[in-house]
Amino acid sequence: MSRPGTSSLARGASLYVICVALAKVLGLVWIIPVTAIIGQTGNGIYGNAYAIYNILQQLATAGFPLAMGKLISERRANGERPVVEHIYRVTMRSLLVFSICAFLIMWFGAPMFAHVISLKSGQASMAQNVPSIRAVSLMLLVVPAMSGLRGYLQGFQKLEGPAYSQTFEQLFRVIAMVVGAYLVVDVWHRDRAVDGAAAATFGGFVGGVAGLLLLIGFAWKLRRKERAYGYEDSPFRDGQILRMVYRLALPVSLGGLVVPIANLVDSWTVTNLLQATGQSYLQAVANYGILTRQAMYLVMLPMAFAYAIGVSVLPAVSAARAKRSHQELQGSIVFTLRSMFLMSFPTSAALLVLSRPINEALFGTTAGSAIISTVSFMSIFASMELISTYILQGLGKMYRPVRNMFIGVAIKTALNFILILGTHSVIGAALATTIGYLFSSLLNIAAVRKYSQVYFSVRRLMSPFFRASLVVAAIMFGVNRFIHWAYTTVLPTAPWRLCAIVQLLVAGGVGALLYLLLIVRSGALGDDELRSVPGVGRYLARFGRRFRKPRRSGTIRSRKYP
Image 1 (tube, rainbow, N blue to C red):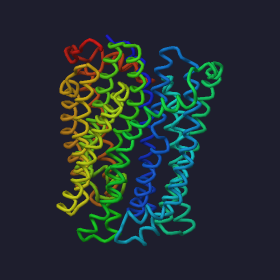
Image 2 (image 1 turned 90 degrees about the vertical axis):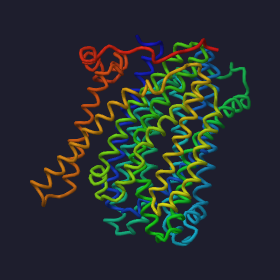
Image 3 (image 1 turned 180 degrees about the vertical axis):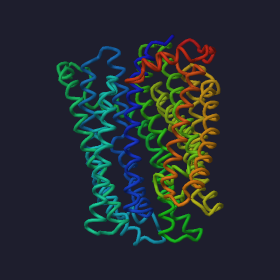
């Protein structure tokens, strides 16, 4: 039996996950042609620009969208519609101011940011990185407004607009990146790495404009009704609303800054530390590009699914707490954690055993395959940290996940120096990041148990997905090795990239189908959760009823809601 609120949360989260999955597939599409056009050095320049942008983008939004979604969800649950309208107006005005300030800082501060990337080769770093930093800074003019509209719609638990905008934005971004890089490098014959990377980063601005226009369309329909409530009847002044939002936005912003800060730590330490081990500037930048635009990009795929689930659960947890509905709170938390494990375990298994064909098929090289395998488990810990952060923020514990995440970043930073200098390789940075996420995710889960008063067994929640992923990993490894042996024996002169694509499609396809069968058979997914999958949900539910074993109980214990 499903708990109240779980079915609607499942439907919204499923739609969001599907749209994010499409967006990430599109995101993988650009890697192949753009990497071929701008090369590994261009990828490193691209990664450096985004490391700086992500910090300022988070400061520009300042946590306001998530704070707005949480406040709107709570006020709507209490019937305070004029306050909802007031929150929207004050937040959007504040986002406009912050976005302009962040854009100006990034545009005019580009030379300084570029110099810090490589202190040993400052002039070369500025010549390479300034164009891309300034190109990506234009996104700061549209992304904060886009985030604000997403937060507004999420506060009403209207996830269609935020979901579709993810795919729409990525589609236009990919087209602009590929076409722009091609025109600059192959038609106008400009510098492959410097100008090609700048053209690719500019594609983000084009995608942002497209996503913003779509969100405006969705918000307009809702705004036509909500504007009728007005905000004149709101008992608060603008300053009071701003302080109310700011009290929530500050810890959310600090929490959101952790991942960009971790990326910036890599941007400013990895290149310098690799040069300290004897690598040249160009070698260090290329290795940093492999880490950020190949390994980390693939590892972040399940993080995108976790984000899609997280933006659904935060307002749901906030509303359940406002209504003091312990049953809804319990259902939302457990559903969210199980959904995260459902996506992250098989993805990690695939990255672990199929890293070489993935790397060859997508990037046309074997360089970085060991790095992808090394960080494959990071996606589980990073997803668990992100999901538990959203849950804690929904529970009103805004600063606890921030503290835990900064502990993880501190551990990662210290290990960067130890492991990079110890291994003389960028793999050291990958290991440091994985260990940092492990510590912060465990601290977050302990806090969720403490403050939610929902007592669950992480071992039991993850057990069916872990067991299924072990079986799938073994099968994919065997299929992968067999195809490689058969292909090289029968067609030894055929293109090796074609072999990698065949390995990836066959082994990955077999693994995905087997994983679905094992999960349904184990009873890990209930009928309501299967039915919530858009398009094919009723067929999956019918299949599950016929195929699964009786579901075990006893996963959850709870106390009385405080």
